[in-house]
Every structure is written in structure tokens, then in C-alpha cells.
Length: 307
Image (cartoon, rainbow, N blue to C red; front, side):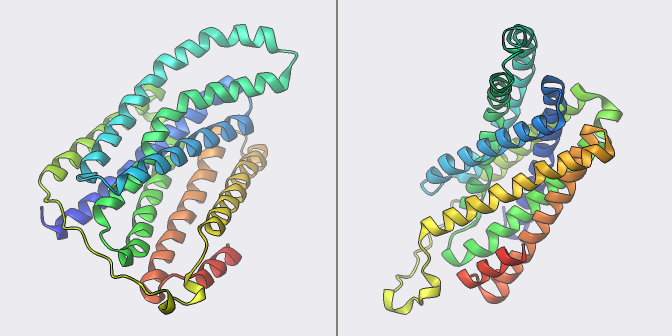
């Protein structure tokens, strides 16, 4: 398939991948709200489990994506993996509904332990699908990015498209889909959408020849300015702190607005839509900055201070 057609198609697939992912997340939060009986706890558990899965999948699959011969096909299978692991939700949820009354009877007077057990149950429920979702960005990026220069330009575009798709998914799942079709049918819509994305990606991958590896020019240490050399541990710490603060604020906002909007799902969806749209817009701006000026540590400092 010609690149001029393939790239927009893959962006569209990744947009709807984000849409399906947030339909899952909003519906998961709704069900966990019944389990926890607390909006803030349900939101915190859903977000924690979701992002632990994303981080685990991104890290483990991302390491292997460099050596993949057909990363687009792997991306497709990961999307199918999301749909299949999402099916486990029905069985696990039924099991939890059986054992939870027993746990509550035993741990009713030990609230911290009961909360920890709820969190572990929620993490077990959401982790498999989230793990597969986490591997989609590095595999799709491995297919599209063949040079170091393209890394800072293409990755933000993928992230922006996926995140804006996620904001769309949060909106339809929070305000329209369950009311129109009910919880179970809405969940099935997300499963079918993810399955279709995976199949299309595999078909496109089978029609695409493997790009030749691009050999990066060797960079002389003397030609690299101090601003270009940033220890990875510094970047990792900054990324971890940024994520900690950002997700902490999201949970706090959910708790604050729940006192005004009252309906937990609407509150959660409103915060998610605003939050994700802002993230997607920020990624789009970062992509433009990378194309216009190039990315550097000074640019990162400015973005962190502005944020």
C-alpha cells in the first residue's frame, strides 16, 4: 500500500483505538463504582490499573518492537488481544460478585485492608487489556519511524491522534452510548471496534513491504552540545513526576466536581474529556515545535514550567 494512503489510514485506526480504549475505561469505572461504592476510589483504581497496564505493555513490548520484522502486524494482534482480554471482564466480574460479599463480611471492620483488596481485584480485572493497549504505540511507531529525526516528529502526532480519539471515546461513553444501548451492548461495541482495527491493521501489514533499515549517521561526541546530552535517569524522573502530578490532579478534580455534578459517571467523563483533549492538544503543539525548532532540554523545561 502506498505510504501516502497508509499513513492517514493508520492515524484513523489509532484514533479509533483511543476511542475504544476510553469507552472501556469509562465503563470499567462505572462498574467499579458499584464495587467500591465511592467515586474517588473507583476513579483512582481505574486510572491506576489502566496506566499500570499501559506502562507495563509500553515498556515490555516497546523493548521488543525494535527487533520486530512486521511491527504493524504485531500492532494488529495487540488490538485483537485487547478485544479478547476485554471479554474476560464478564467472567471475572461475575466471579467478583460472588466472592465480594464474603470478603466484605470478613474485612468489614478493617477498612484499609478491604480497600487494598478492592484495588487488587480492580487491577486484576483491568490489567490484561490495558497491557495490550500499552504495546500499541511502540509497535505502530516502530512501523512508521525509521530515523532518529522522525522520532520527535511522528511520535507526538501518534500520541495526539490517539489521545483526541480517547477524549471522543470518553465523551460518547460518558454521555451517550450507555443511555442509547445499555452497558453490555456498549461494551460489545468497543470490543467489535477494537477487533476490526486489529484485523484491518494485519491486512494492511500483509500488503506492506518491509521498509529498509535506515542507518543513522554516527554522531561525534565533540559535535554534541551539552544541551543535547541529557542523562536518561533525569528524563525518567521528570516523566515520572509529571505523570504523578497529572494523574493526581485528575483524581482530585474528579472528587471535587463530584460534589457539584453528583453523578459519578458524568463527573468522571467530564474530567476525562477535558483532560485528554488538553493532552492531545499539547502533543500536537509539541509535534509542531519539534518540526519548527527541534526538541531540546531547554524546550522540555519550558513546556514543564508552562504546564
